[in-house]
Length: 279
Image (tube, rainbow, N blue to C red; front, side, top):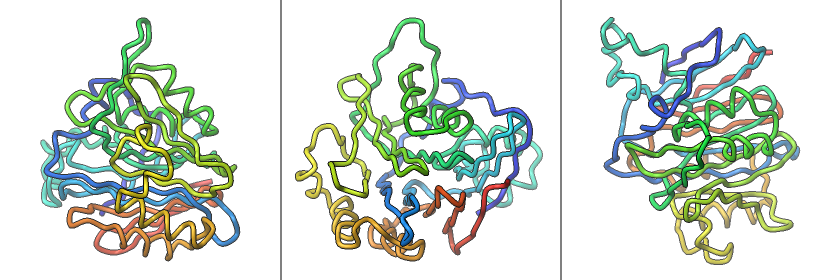
């Protein structure tokens, strides 16, 4: 687990940069959930389950005044091992890593994280610019102030999943708003938690195809749902990590827990690391 700081203009996010969120994987099984801590402040957690590779926290301090914290897989900028960081040729694309946010928050308390959704296909709307499946996450982190703003980004661009599986996304913000965004038969679908349910989970099945009562047939979703139901949607950071461990896979690459009000991140690779958004 590495730590990189980006300062200056936001990274360029285009379909060619962001579409290849993943070459076809050997396996994937990401699990995400949005809940709250003991004081009711929004908290989001995720397991990133993918092929092993170096990972990095990316702390962005942008010249538009925005700060973000995100985690990225360094393989997508050519870093396959720690030794590659001493190779000038292999590190030449390292400055592009800010564009590749696999999960993150910004200083408005907006969170976005992705999971593979093999059935996702986004229709093409004439006249819209293109963003890749990862590029849309960076666009949201760099510009959105609320979940509503984030959904509007999805509804403004054509989203390109070329080069990898389709994706769907968990959104949350410091107001407690939360939603899953995915593409159902090409159309943008926004899924909210049922009335009175203070938590929301996402794993690798197409949410639009299942009613809430049928989603518990999926084992990782069911494990999270039962725990969050019993705690009324409240978990500490340590509890969140423990729940992530309950649904951990052999290929879990990192675990991250974000506090949306305080702007905090605990990321666990081989060991835990704690970060806080810059003022």
